[in-house]
Image (cartoon, rainbow, N blue to C red; front, top):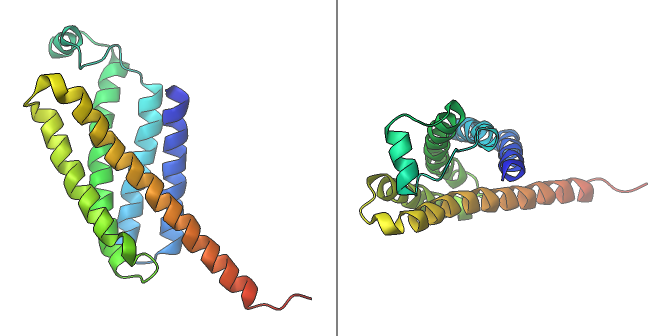
Length: 173
């Protein structure tokens, strides 16, 4: 898990840099900064492990009593920052994507991701059905992480089309 989180963080930082260099709109810069924050946070939560799963009553009681380690507290608090940054990034980038023909097909997907991500976060936090909260958490995280993958895939397609267009514009010698 540690390696996975750190690599996801590095990949998300790379995605942020790629978007910032490809899209020059203010909303793209803001969205890229939010992705960068999420990427750094992902690496941090990978290194700051939880003592136990807060989905278990005994662990939740330890958290409520303040009987968990500093790295557990860092993991939980930074996770909230990551989630909020990703939700905001999807909504802010939807604006940037709507301004660029190459990215416009992702605009609606970004809006749906942001709204659904926020609704699932609220559902996870208020815990209306505690027995289902673990599933809600996994769906919530999956919605956001799949969004990162889709945007990364789209960036690779856009970058490849730019490279191919550049190659076609220069005759080979």
